[in-house]
Image (cartoon, rainbow, N blue to C red; front, top):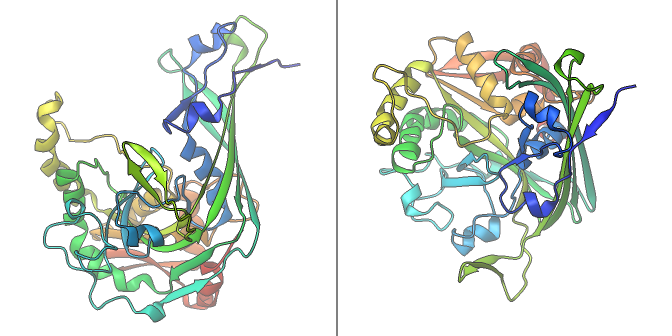
Length: 415
């Protein structure tokens, strides 16, 4: 019978304030596992994302409240359709600017986050192109679970250990949500193609965001509520082959848990501390899910963007001449569109941009999926119901005519 080594469980006090990679190490009484491999590292948002993305509502948001630095008009509404964002790996939605309003609008970003020469989409987004509905009415509990297999690199070069991560997140929404989605996102394609390169250059060279290819997104749908609470746990089990340890153990288990919650009462910063609005008005501004258009560029364009960014970083790094310039993304890595866009650009090598929407991958999730499929599996499913289209240098997905009738069903789908 296999023994199990259980690591000390972290508390929410340990995890929530720093909201960074959660490292769970084995107790000192079991030094054998730490000599074999580093303890699994997993950010709190990763746990939430893997578990709740399977609920078919897009990207679950770790911190649903709007940024306190924005004008009060923006904070009353929360993240909105047309927002250009980065999903920061630390758990934040990094709001940059909004593509649907003028630069001086209180619903746009701070001046330093708006590209020079910015102009909103034209013609303006038609209000009739926005569908408003209630995806969840009244008290709602979403229970998301994911079981996925991966490998951990051992400390000895060339050694790997098989691992299974079981992630669980329970999101409670006491009063339901208001959902908004753009019905036809095609109106954004030419606008994005005309601006995507400039946006990537701006957010890196001026904004110091260290965005990598695929990180830029435009909000085209949201689920907003007035209050929420959440519990998340993760358990990683690592298989240890008998010849890797002198003990009889064959498994090592690492567990972590956290909880969080929030309301739509506005906050402000005073003397470095968050202060609640004394009037206590509760707004429906907590974005628990966002759905986005996801923007990637072809390799040739990205190489040029990277080289243009090199002078801004090179003085601080010893980079050998002639080495392709790369950097670690400051955004989340597991978003399904990142891999899907890369595969689409390979399918259409003459395209300059890949633009997909979250509903493309949401629509092919299955109720019995144990975890988010790989990019290749997503694309295989997608090709059953979508055509790969190329127009004006953009590759995108469009429902096949014979299945076009399912579009609205999927757009309002929950799992």
